[in-house]
Amino acid sequence: MMKKSLKGLAIGASLVMAMGLLVGCGGEKKAAPEKKMVKVGIVQLVEHSALDAANKGFVDGMAANGYKENENVTYDRQNAQADQSNLQNIAQRFVSGKVNLICAIATPAAQTMANATKDIPIVGTAITDYAEAKLVASNKEPKGNVTGTTDMNPIKEQVDLMLKIMPQTKNVGVIYSSSEVNSQLQVKILKEVLAAKSINVVEATVSNVNDIQQAAQSLVGKVDVVYAPTDNVIASAMPTLVAITDEAKIPVICGEGGMVKAGGLATVGIDYYKLGLQTGAMAARILSGKEKPATMAIESQKEMQTIVNEEAAKKLGITIPADVLKAAKASK
Image 1: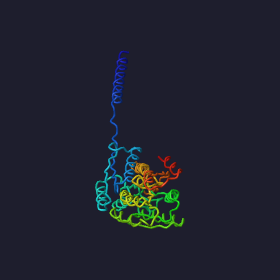
Image 2: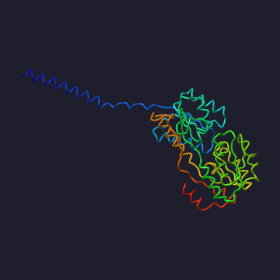
Image 3: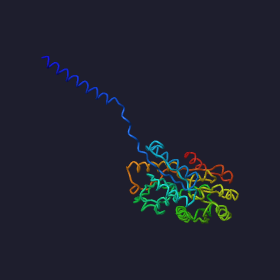
Image 4: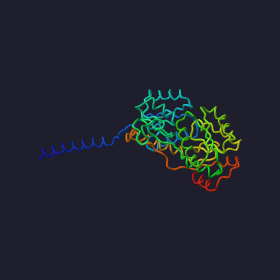
């Protein structure tokens, strides 16, 4: 009887010790698993408000989808200052630095990055037509390492806005960079829209910002209004353009809101910050392994905003229709 009791006590003690060990193990705080840090290269063609907004939107879009700077993502931010050799150096930097993804802001930036790597995922933004720029097989099915968001602006709606503000328009001047593929596409569409309305188009092309003053002056006396597409050269030097057009009392209808705020008269266009947010969300899906660029269709922004520069209208002696002002107020 005593032996059985002693044996029972021994077993009980062993169980208590075992439970103690288990409790001890369970009580120890386990180290949280380390977040995998990814590196993203951001290349912006040039500084101007639209591209700056897209850049900020991209980072915020990444954060909203789980990729927060210095927590699980680091950024290598580069600006090419509209220089092709800078773009090539940046591309080499990203490739040799083995970034996990590249965000390319504007068409020339995306084209240079795509030429430099077929392996690193590239997400573009502020690009009008990826297929036209030969970045993808098609906008619906890219088939390569490039995808992103398009900033194709609603040119027909912009022409309608132009004619609502200036119904007597007969001649429209358009100023753009001859080297930007997407600007050429916009001008082609503009011509088609205006031809259907029997409105004449006068073109003035530039190769860099130093040509803008002369190109703008060449339109004076020939046109009733100037249309400026989402062209990076023009957008980066709007004060130079409007210095000529304001003096000649020629309004400028713009491809996007930042150009209006920089001196243009009005636009119906996309919000580049929101476009950047959309791009960041796409990048996050790629980095998390949920999707691949090859099968991600190019995305567009559905909502457009009306923007009017009332100060410019006053300077030009133009009365903005009440319904246009109402639409602009609703867009704020």
